[in-house]
Image 1 (tube, rainbow, N blue to C red):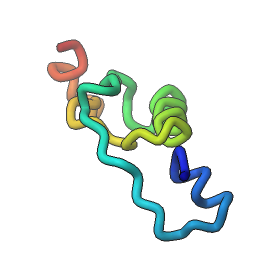
Image 2: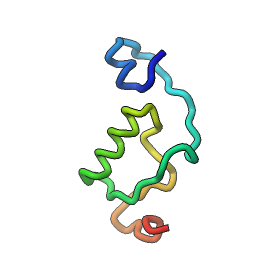
Image 3: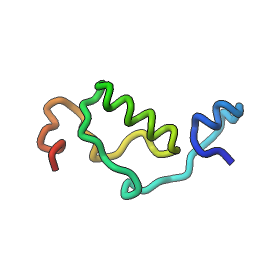
Image 4: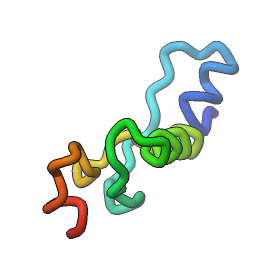
Length: 69
């Protein structure tokens, strides 16, 4: 069993599909897209076997209304 897509790649399992995870099980981020903070959060999500994207993640610089909710 693979814990994440990274484990699957290391083990040569190219058809790996992660388990579905509810957005209630991981936090949204206010980090700006493309920032080092956002890249680090995406990397941690991948390592943890979580989806890369949360529907409430900040999507743009102008997304300030959503960023502070």
